[in-house]
Length: 138
Image (cartoon, rainbow, N blue to C red; front, side, top):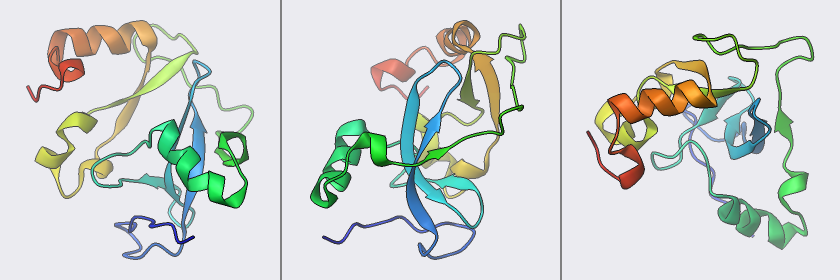
């Protein structure tokens, strides 16, 4: 089975693009396409993270599951804290919201991310992008 991998915007090809998992400090994990040459996740049709069911669809023909997708992890001593309250359990907040990626094209993935705890991440979105979870674009 052939799997279509997205093109890395830095490499301009997909030779180094692999399926990888990223563990966020709240314990959850996200799967996406990762360029091992440039150490960055690569957008796939405007999505940085793949739904877990899609990852399973990619892995099952090889007799593999979610647990077989390798992790991308910070070093053991690299603890990152919320920039508001210093909570070590963080989520990565996109300065350019992913649901607006098309409006930031073609370089949405080049915008920075910042570490926020779950409470401050939710607070930011509740105030500044209240329509995001409802599929809005404002």
